[in-house]
Length: 249
Image 1 (cartoon, rainbow, N blue to C red):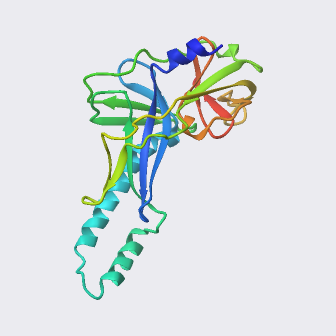
Image 2 (cartoon, rainbow, N blue to C red):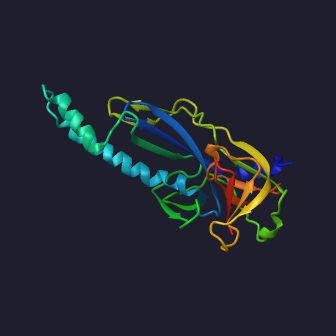
Image 3 (cartoon, helix red, strand yellow):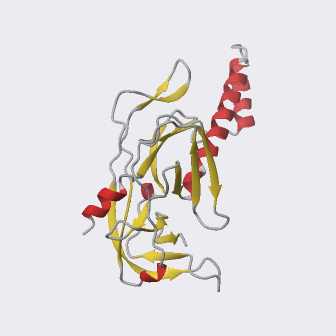
């Protein structure tokens, strides 16, 4: 029932691959989803996915500062105590994320800037990619003009990239940095699920419908992915792992 719609949607729905490194040295992969709404590099995702972009800049900047101070500490009898003091200063524990890198797959030849626009109340965001010469997605989302056609019991599909199977990354001990590599598996599989509309949701009393609830919860890596009908027309942006999916009206 959704075969053609899935093929259509995957032409402009993309995975965001993320790698994080803890202070204890653990490097972990993660994935989420975004989809394009025009041919000018504008995409939609969830606000909590968008937050990974400024977070990466802040986290990485702090770790660069930490390394600079660490490297200035004399390797003498007070070295261990001074390192502990530096850890307290930066609030670094073994589980603290100290590095974060994002990779927007199969979208553009190059990206110089991403402008983020967050919805003031809902978990939605618009991403404006800039500085590219070529785009690697085809087409864009088409939204329903009449949301009244979405009723209880209607079957809808959603898709995203909930399984971060990519392993094209490493920690470089020479630079003490995590980095993307040209070896290994660079991809993660898309994963569609479906469900029926169960109820409608309002963000505030008497504010009108701002979302719907589905019978099937989304998966974590599907965050930011689309919700669509059997024709491949979009109605919402998925908000896993809860059962709510916010409507773009």
